[in-house]
Length: 254
Ligand SMILES: C[S@@+](CC[C@H](N)C(=O)[O-])C[C@H]1O[C@@H](n2cnc3c(N)ncnc32)[C@H](O)[C@@H]1O
Image (spheres, rainbow, N blue to C red):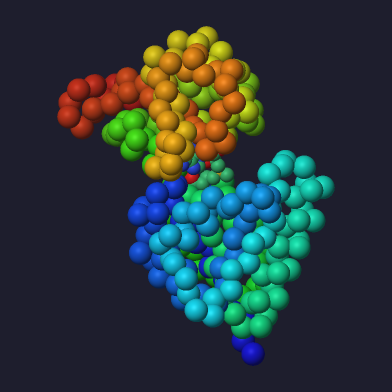
């Protein structure tokens, strides 16, 4: 029997109606949907998004796979290997498997580890990646702030790694999107204050999800327990508008 096909399917940032038609079509036609979850007691965010749009599919198997929320490879790697083995068994039986992820599958996603594993260990398996609306675009849409235009430069940074680099990054880039900020809020707010950037910073959590929240005064929440699905957008806009003649091109090298 030939091997089944593997799909990495992004289900978007939260609202089910932001899923793409392709993602829904794939999820309705595959034999198996593989659903990552951090704990058996917490419903997978990706599945919460997809379930409504996909609905019941007769004969389809849905498997819940444990992907612990930790940076400790002694915990992640063994759990992933168990999950990958579950997927491999189905692919080898000729079944198509779609692994779902919140947001885009190739942007800070567990799917990336499965993709790398599949390329290395299952070279004969056909793979298709289904892209999605990412938090990278959903969050700016909530605050209606352009990500970049003309000569502006953008950086996307996982804030929980490498706080020391932030001041230099803030000077080099016009827009900075700080992902994974929830565990380092006080430190990030202090750096933004020192760099005089609090005025042009926004905090957005759960963009397009239930309980979405936008905060302008970052000091007011710096000591709160912030949501894992949160991002800070630093938008200077000092070099925006070149195509409308609003800034001179000499600022390019600034
Ligand atoms: C593991 S990454 C997942 C990124 C996802 N693959 C994507 O394309 O957006 C998790 C981080 O993405 C950001 N994030 C994801 N969804 C979000 C949302 N709906 N609202 C705000 N931030 C979000 C947060 O910074 C969170 O800590």
